[in-house]
Length: 614
Image (spheres, rainbow, N blue to C red):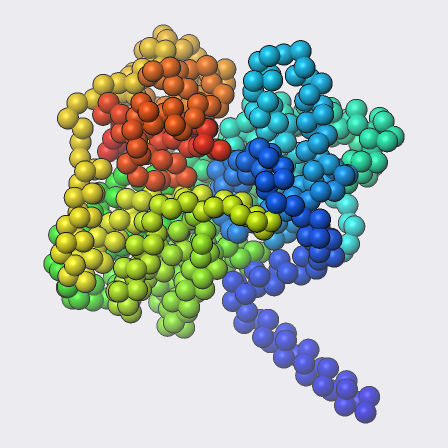
């Protein structure tokens, strides 16, 4: 009997080993997170029994949601579904689990409020900006948790503490994420100072027991953080440079080199592997003739690309209605050739590396889009099932990346034009997700460019010979793409888009930092919390773009500034033209204003030329 059991167990073990060898990266990503989550299942169950509704913490819910959005979505760290659990525990608790679930206790929120009450009691200005003070207090605490997730520093063994080296690296990454997210400098240092004071009091230390980092005291972390200034600056410049290349489709080759080096340092980092997959896919797309791609692939990232919008609009506009020959063989037209096969394989491997670590619907859908060009039949056969699964996984989310890609693939592969049209119509529905009940999720944002989705929609309507619908979409695209009749510059302290570097230096003096790439320079003015993009490729040194963060002393027209309400902004600028890059797009005085909101307050305003060409 024992021998039979051994034989059966051996055969089962062999079976699972063989099966695991053929596991696709998407399934492996789910299993990987599930294995890590086993350690936390009892804790999650306990927290769920203490979960409270968003309404019970008042304005704190919007503060937490906004902060997590800035730290996770704006930094392009993760676009997957994220549950938010708020518990009524008296002890302070803040944690991000391996699957993206984020936990915060009312004990922590109450402590923050009590300390801020003492700090603001003598300051009218601080009382007036209490929610800003709350967010600046909470953000570095959350950033440390988010950084652990970004670096993938989890263990399948219970109660395993981070090593000192890992802890110091988490603090470096947290500092970088705070800066990319647009928070003021010094927030993490302030928190570590406060934490040191907390642990000096025995009773308070018990309440904050979950923040203990073993033998590494807050004072030691602070000292190490200050000693790592150069590393923090260098890592910020590299990651923010990669994000700039991704979001503007410029400098992709440089970004790939940077990521190759970062992967040597952080081979298991979810964040670096995710960025590597997106940049590798972008490099592959750049190698294709857009006339052959026919429809826009939507990457799960905030990418603003005027050139692609024009190309896809013209391609759709020139096609004949109900023309199947025009789309006869998408696969053969985009299949890798000798010139770009290396780029294709690198992109495929990058997606596999990332999705093996964690499942993310948007990335899975763009991976499916990539596989649609595969020279291997068995890979192409999986495309629609992967895309459909991603769409179902993200149903109801604000982010429509998975749905838009599934629709495009249904059309490109000539499977179901009607369903593709219905899916894209849903993508263009601007109704916002509403938060109700206890089960909360961090908003995914809307990173896609609505214009690209409409280009795809326009093409499908023509394919279906829907003349009225196609004419309507065509006119919409013409209206948002047409050049303005006149441009009145939006001047910020004597500087506007289109000005020369000489004029900029005369008005604002030298920047705090300049970050270079082949195409452009990023000039950072810390005191103004403003970043300017300067054209460098052609050597004319003109200002291409101005981005004002929150808070900033700069004011726009009608004394509008970051931090003002959406209502106040739209009284001056009217309703938005479309959505793009987690922001709403407005046209004002012949300029394009890209406005990102958090809790209906302006977090960032970017000024560009309408139909800019770089």
